[in-house]
Amino acid sequence: MAKGPRYRVPFRRRREGKTNYYRRRELLKSGELRFVFRPTLSNAIAQFAKAEPQGDRILVSAVSRELVRDFGWKAPCGNLPAAYLTGLLAGLKARKAGIEKAILDVGVKKPNPGSRVYAGLKGALDAGIIIPHDPEILPDESRIRGEHIADFWRKIGDPERRERLFSQYLKAGLSPGELPKHFEEVKEAILKAYS
Image 1 (spheres, rainbow, N blue to C red):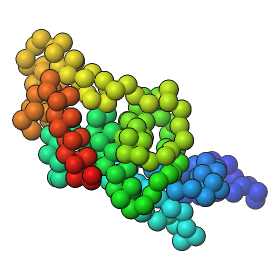
Image 2 (image 1 turned 30 degrees about the vertical axis):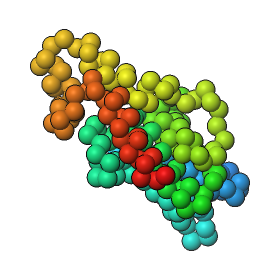
Image 3 (image 1 turned 60 degrees about the vertical axis):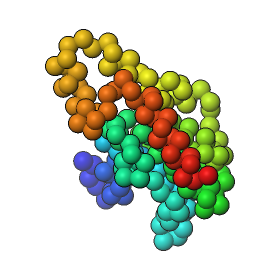
């Protein structure tokens, strides 16, 4: 660690790798609401935040656990289809609260095109929120529906390996091969609840 009379210790959140203050300042200078999407290993969090002098105020929030509780989602909450549905749910809640546009805040880590962050963005866009973006970064419709997971399930021949890799799906009573159909059912339930 650097020492000396001229050394300035970085802010705590910068030291912990949680906040890039330069990027945050640039987002806040726009004066727009931010669509904050943070995927974790087993969850996805989507929020519409407004910057205020005291700190960010969360106007609307959706967590992928709500899919299980309110809409009967049986698959794990950390995958790409769950990220899309969480973004869709947050976008529909935002529309109901009168929010029409925002800018994307991806945080410290730079996500890859087609990742869960952009699946959540696609969900918010499909809900009718205007968010500036490049269409090439969004995941394919087949991946959003979970067809890549269903294809992988079908390719595995060993039943023991299937059971080990997809234990969360099977424990919830869902065959991974039926994930695209289940995705459509949950999506319809969300759209019906907020129409």
